[in-house]
Length: 173
Image (cartoon, rainbow, N blue to C red):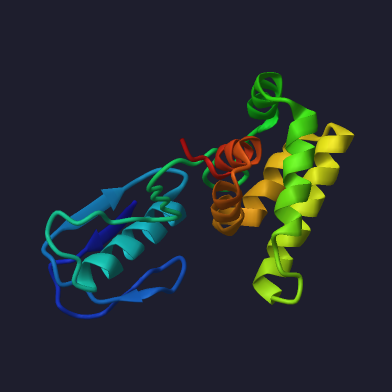
């Protein structure tokens, strides 16, 4: 049986992992079973967070916490997302040859001597190559790397197909 008693103000030391903590709240935890070491590790971490001044009602997080504002295709360790379906749907709705032409036009509008624009230019060139090779995931990946700057230029120049592809890659409506 493992017992953690937080009613005493003195320092406590975990008998299994040697973590030190000083409880400030009044509570106790008793656990028996095969995984007492892990339970004690969690309890020590909880005590440390509570003692660190977590406000009442605050989330106490053990492990990873992911907060996504907006859209996300995959979140967390070992998360996997597929963009092939998105690309196949998009490619069936647009003229792929027009997309290649518009990406080339976008590249011509960027200044290769400006380091930021050169980076966008390179991503657009790779996206154009991926379109020609039929690599849908590559197209969306490179357009995502080209980012918002490429979308600004596409909208300014009036390349609607390229702008739509960039929006799809960026997860924008």
